[in-house]
Length: 307
Image (cartoon, rainbow, N blue to C red; front, side):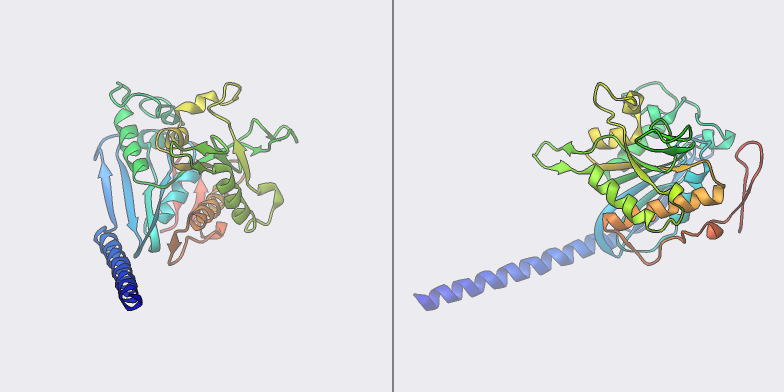
């Protein structure tokens, strides 16, 4: 009887080992079959934008980077473009550097349908001219585990009033979250504040000037007393409350040069990629001297870059 039990145990162990190896090989095969590629939507229209899908050599989480939803925030789309040719060891990236082409071309916040970052609560069949763009972004959010929306805001956010340029009503140099914790239907939780704090900690270790350190800005968007109820139409709010994704709005200040803003956003994005567990062969340089930005002209958003 003991011999029979030992044989059964050995067979069970061998079966589990082979099953594990089979599952691992299948996972690697599925990952390798998903090739990196680039897609352009609404070609030769005012709403044309490009999506870069970057697949890692090994499976892992997927992080979506959106920028250019506001056309007057050049730091966002110039930062996002730096990730378009990344090589990944583990995990995946989806990158949309210039989402709102009409707004970017005019250098204004709004595009054809108004403020695109207030349209994500509209039904998919609404008549807003930007609805088709928003609907495509919603599909990309479904494919992702983490979502970053890159922005620039004036001055510096601080949870307490420090000065006219550093207080709770400002947006610069912060990681925006819509809630500290989100409770999932299965009883588990998404700890957005903990994730955002860890990203901030990683980023601030690389920023020498204390005045430019990032903070976490919890807008408490869903609660009745929120000062930011308009954010219920935002991309990050939709990502969290409709798709249950960890979503951050990364805001660099406009109170610095454009090259510095790109540097700060690169630091923040790199920190989020690392915290999400995605490994790249090499992340973009975080030095403001390596951003490629030379000059911003006084009018519009015409930007000279190297190369």
